[in-house]
Image 1 (tube, rainbow, N blue to C red):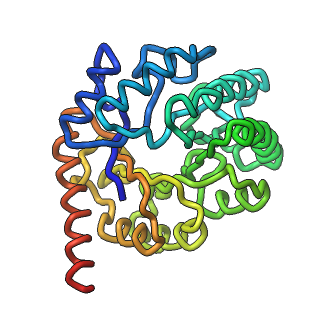
Image 2: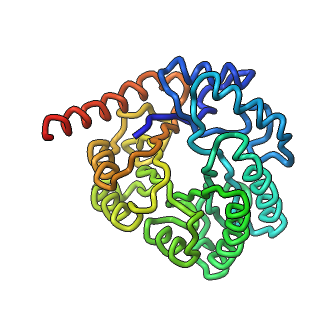
Length: 285
């Protein structure tokens, strides 16, 4: 696995300074957000010349772009909001080759009109699922046109709230351009903590063969994801990392959900876990 981080963890005036901060932590892999280049996260327009500049800044530091953020609310109750998101997503897809990126991360969304990460009871309706399928079908057409992969993750507050929902989406759309982000923290509600191993195991059983990216985020003792340095909460890291290895995952493992101040401890924790796992495999071999 390749250890990386959300680039926007480091708030800097320029992309060059942001990437310098990434490199200073010994990391060579990021999930990119256009906000790091002075644009909105979902820009209305991306100048191809800017995409080339971004690529040069990455190449100069030998940092790879594991994925680009393309999140918008795919089941927003306003169809125009969804159309705007699709238009902007297509713009991102159109410059991915210039950026040196092949994966765009998505949010399957919610019926909440204000916050795409907020649960809404109408997420469970057939109409919401139909809207998701329609939006995703258009998104996948753009992905096929520009030869990129769209990555979704099960997230308890979104319409794709579980591994079973994600499996259903993959099976119904049946596209080689749709894959999975595995973020164990997002699979768990507060009441699920005693059963987290079983929930993680089910997710890997259903989705392990379709992983393109993994996220690393902590969970508090109250069961809330994020806002903690990795290793200081209650996520069962040995079990999660073991599940990733058993699934044969060798791709980017992207840390997020903590402040810049928590980055050194988070990097050290997860790097130590990965190094210990490699050493254990070497001894057993």
